Amino acid sequence: QSVLTQPPSASGTPGQRVTISCSGSSSNIGGNYVYWYQQLPGTAPKVLIYRNNQRPSGVPDRFSGSKSGTSASLAISGLQSEDEADYYCAAWDDSLTGHVVFGGGTKLTVL
Amino acid sequence: QLRLQESGPGVVKPSETLFLTCTVSGDSISGSSYYWAWIRQPPGKGPEWIASIFYSGSTYYNPSLKSRVTISVDTSENRFSLKLNSVTAADTALYYCARVYDSSGYFSRPYFDYWGQGALVTVFS
Image (cartoon, rainbow over all chains, first blue to last red; front, side, top):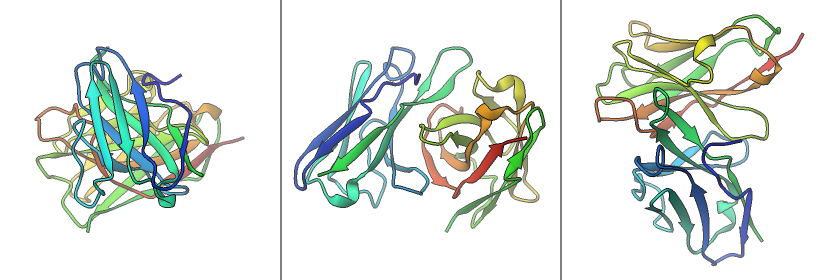
């Protein structure tokens, strides 16, 4: 059971816009930045979004992040076949001595 | 180009200790804005953060694993290591090492910007 809750699956057709949600609590998303990672099959995760809504250089602007209260979302516009991957949210959690928490992941299928 | 490479045994027996090393090339491990981390991913599941370390030796542990884990750094060899005691089948996973960018002065931002390719560890008797 992951601390951050994501839907296990999402899907869309090429060109569509899809969103993936990530729900947490006041000790993690509510008070800290959210990060999003994309994991293509057989590869290590790659950071897509940092500090809620910032994109590292090289990440297409089709990817965007937002946060409101204790929830966050990743939006992918102009969906492409190469976007088919697992997506994970992550945040710092202030409980106990503080630690990193990840979501359980969302498998995105491009139909 | 920064590169991280994990090394260690592919198989560990239950109750034994797992040792993994991450060798960093392409940049110094002693950068002031960077921490170094171990993250694992059981088959078919999401990532789990294990521990992080700063080049000075400051350490941060996942509370759920803290009693069994030690992370250490060797700046002279530009590498850092993980020791996990008393392994069980639940520790079977792909173990990644990663760099963390965090300029806040205290590890609190899971911005893992570079990852190794991962080392598969199976706990099996």
